[in-house]
Image (cartoon, rainbow, N blue to C red; front, side, top):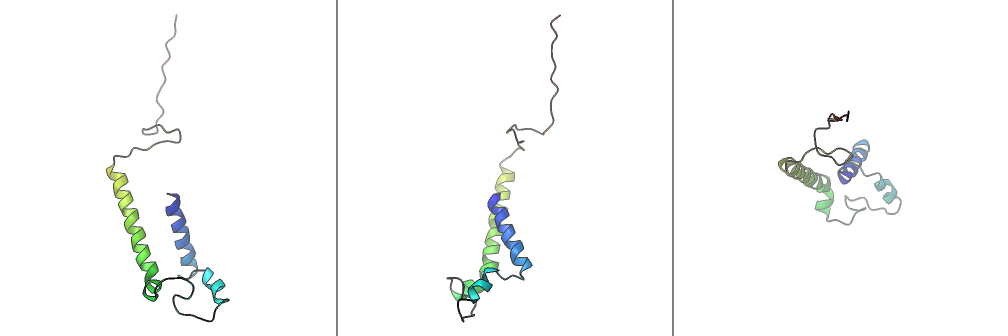
Length: 97
């Protein structure tokens, strides 16, 4: 869940920067090259399509995890680690009289 959150934060950063990594501006100061892969060590084809390809893999993995989680009969667990619906039961005390 934490890793999913980190990937979604990265997606939000890319969305705000018009699908451009903010570190690209830093890399442009150190080279005159401006092809699609100048700032990463990937083949040109993969550099051009990495957001679509890796995005599709991310979505497929998340859907797979969700399917497995739902099919496992997973019950909700509260912060104390107690399974159940979250309702507090009534405690009945016997009086010794």
